[in-house]
Figure 1 (cartoon, rainbow, N blue to C red):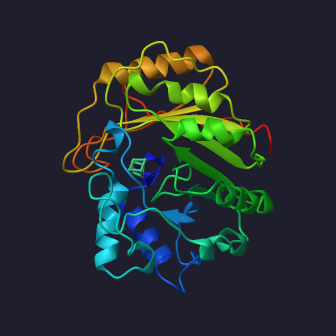
Figure 2 (cartoon, rainbow, N blue to C red):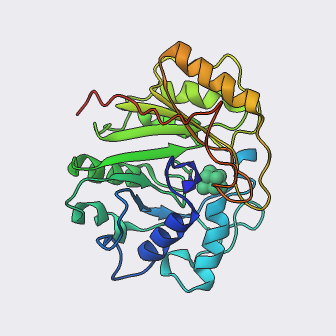
Length: 274
Ligand code: SF4
């Protein structure tokens, strides 16, 4: 699930991370990086699955990283749904990376992939969860569009207390992903409405602690209507769900700013488990 869904990072951050992660000696060593958040990609690559994927940043970046010779990005995917360097690939050699980070940080898992993609074996997902459970100094955020698989296998997984699980929805048609998410036993369940491509009235937010909304960025970004965002904000307020407005989007992530009716929304869920 590409990292454009992360609340606070921009393109330069992502590229810096991926170039570091894609290298060899630099894997896991973020000591020179001043921000506290990090990405960890125990798998890379993906396939488009719904309209929110149309301008997938990870797909574009993978093509560049392949051309630069980055070892993790040499496996090509199906050109109809994926692309150069973006074939789904497991990287078991990176499973230990978070163990080497002794200072706690928020880690976005699979900024360049989708952990619940059908080509990721359940046993491998289990190994990722074990690393998460073994490193309680970190908080992990996992985001998927493969909510059906999440629901199918979620009951068989041991859910670590430091794992936030989210689904991405772009229009009302994909609200069923929230229903799937509600079924899993994650400490924090969150929804990423980004890129927001349509109105989403009457969402059922029971059991959801956090919602992130944002517009698309990049040269082919699609516009977002203010009324869609305001409605999500109001639904969150009514349901007691923390609301985070990330950006309007545009040519670059910061092009449109991130104020909504004159203020910013940076709400975060309450960490009852800490
Ligand atoms: S699910 Fe995420 S990573 Fe996969 S193609 Fe769609 S946007 Fe890209």
